[in-house]
Image (cartoon, rainbow, N blue to C red):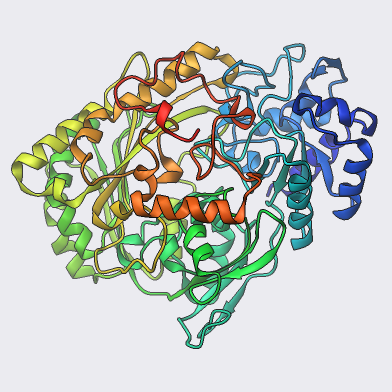
Length: 603
């Protein structure tokens, strides 16, 4: 439904800023000898698909980077109508589902697009944290050309497929980005798939490109009578940062994480080499690509992921009155480990500040139990809901795709362009054992959901940890995933167009401190999910990977990216530098108090 809008805005945007004569000036801040002729050569090598990176709201402004320009009414109208829509924003190179990552949060410079109020044409509009140029990748050779160019001039490069990233890793004030959104070769089902270089089949897979969305992948799989273990958001591209960070799913308790299901990746390395990685060849790289973090070890082009025959799925949806949040948390915590073992996954939102009068949504999914077993398993929750005369639906659907279409797609908040800061924690199974542990955990969850320092906190409980029976085949995610029952998230939101630098910095600090009690409870064997972690999480890498994985990943990074062209915030091999100059000034914001160790982390 977005195609006409996408191409209208894209065509208008790519014609309204930089000229070739000004290219060297644009990159003068990097003190690099990149001439207009060099950029022209790159553009020729990618068949004319090198474009200026521009803020999504630019058509509505009468100035850009200190120069006057003319408002483009037709494109501006499209932007105003869709600027709050995450699905639209992810189709724009300069658009981000979390709008704070398109601006320079340290200085406030940028071209913000408020999701709540109209754009003011004569407000100051600058590049902000959007890469100056990007290659619209349509071929493997396009990604190769971009990375060879970055290595030649030793400049960092950004990789972006949709911009659904809570750490801002797909933005940054860098010369060049690779826009992977349109790399969508035809998907294919491969039965009894044998990875390159291997002898034995590992099962049926679906092979897809890095620009493919979950929505398209699910539709394709279902037409083939298959299911893949993927996430809940339409705007996420599973072949990019999702799989690189680990990738969780409401099906993970039964089928495992994304990294457990990906069996082969074809990738362009930081030096431009195109290789295949699996357990039989380039196995060290395969280890790093499955959990080591996005935008770090290479640019994924093609992913082969296990596909399961469609099966009946039990789904239970409850709407619990907000006044009963504490009672609900006690019941959930008391039953968490048993439900996890029985295969229940799903999403629970005990605190939604944007919808304070609506019941607490509880969505549980199970592809393992039959209808009778499901009701027996959830008897305590059913009884609790009935005692409150709460809303509930318990039914059997013919496939996960049916559940996705009816209970997940369109039911999650798809509003975009808000600023978001987030923190998360994996909760070990042992923290759910016994009354004393359960009481401490409930207290910490209530504390995490409490308003803090003037910011309203959102609390999410994600039942997405893999069951203990699922074997980790040498991925690089934190081992804490394998001993945890829940993944919890807190977050705060604001309008980045109407927030100053101090307000934004303080938001990150407040959210960081919201889970301090949970950090204390889980300090010995907990961890954090890289893709949804606190932007200023403490530690020296062990929170995301575990100490042994972290040391191995550092060695692999040095081997495959000695020039450091693929660097991301909190990523392997990153350090303080110009690449990260638009991140909030955590020291000035005093975010470093309590648990943050900014001095011993690779920023």
